[in-house]
Image (tube, rainbow, N blue to C red):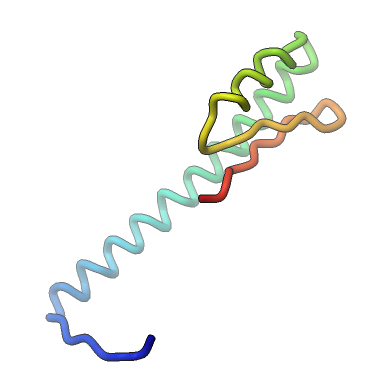
Amino acid sequence: MKGTVSITIEDFQALLDVKERADNVVERTKRAAKELQVFLSYICLRDDVKAYIDEFNRQSTTAEIIIENGRALIKFKED
């Protein structure tokens, strides 16, 4: 679809500000996921958590925990 839209400078600036905040949230979420992966990997080495991870994966609608070679990975489910 092609077309044009006219908006005020103030509205355009607000749109840019919202995009910047959304990009910031995405980046912080990815960083938190990496930190949680490190933590889960540590826990997996010390305890049998497979049953808990299976239950989490069954209930979660947004993410899945995958254990590969003793390393935890958090995979976000696509919409």
